Image (cartoon, rainbow, N blue to C red; front, side, top):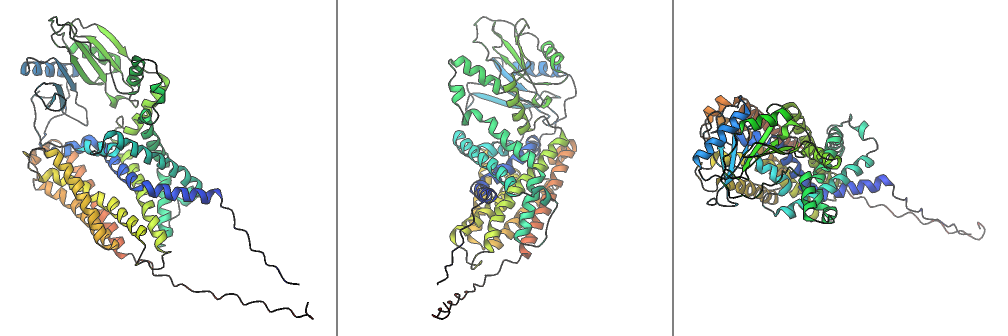
Length: 541
């Protein structure tokens, strides 16, 4: 009788293994975009401070007087300078932005026909500074890629954000001991160390990462799911819903063509402050000046509350009568506004904003460590780590350019701000062009150099640029730097200290990569086939 050997059936894949594969591939496919979005979005929490740092000529004092008098003086001054002024919008100063921004319709201005000036709140005089997008560039990049069509960019980033949610959920399912592993870190264990670091970074900011990803999707939910808005019967209904969801106020009526005198604005500002609180008026818009249909609209500052749903008052610009007031919204609009406000963090004080920033950096490191972990895990399994296949090399080079290269490009953006001539035409755009050119150069460098050397060199360049920029500032690089330091020294000092801290972090990373010993080639041992069983004789059978 012959012996029959049955082959063992393959073990079915469990839910954790399936979720692990989903987590790995969703993270890898959109990881490079997510890393850039996380890092530039994190920088955007200090959007106003970055802009002020990049305009060192502005040595203005914070306004400490009555807001009502400030609004009246600003509008009167603009009307004297622009006798034909019919509409003006004023953004009032805050603790983070000490200047006034005034804009009005000017048929001779380029673009959309608006002209904008920056005013000193103390003197009311126009102040000039170098042209720059400042922190607004990082803010726009993190959801719009700056150069790309807004619709396409937001679709791509929304798609990546959805993948991010999948990666977060699947990551929690995959690591059944994820909270226990948070307190475990095994140094110098190669892949195991990277996995421990990735798990710890993920757990540290897990609620924040979920909130920031989910709320980012909610801010553009009408773009991704427009069917509800499109089903409304009339354009007026659609406009009403959009007004509830966005920071909007009713449009002013058309001019009546009947001359009239504009009412005093200071008492109107005081009425708004009685309704909302002292110094809570964020912007004032005056429409149809010197016309019977003049309107004065005031919007509550977003720094006064979490939700971004609009709160405003509208006055008759001739009689001063309160025509309309909006002090709240429905539950759905308020929920959307709260999520939007949590995402932007404009309500946050300095301590909360630093918390946002730190946890945002942790999220950035989480994405970056996941990208690196993919290559570390697979390098150890290569037959020859020195000669990886094309797909592995491509992922590795994209990791270098996305992580180390983006650091170089961001600090180069600040150097462009200091290097480019102040009188240069389209100066702000050339700062941004420089950012992308430097980032492209880091990708080329990563493709041409050995991977390890490219990591070390680009991280070292980032460290050097971060370290030298504060020194250049101390030596007076940038017009009016000394007077700006005297007026807003805390801002420049904290910014420069942060750059030195980032220089230390990048230098430490470069040092660790330089000391790292890559995995050696595996020795493939061929197993001998099992010896054939001896044939059974008749007597044995």
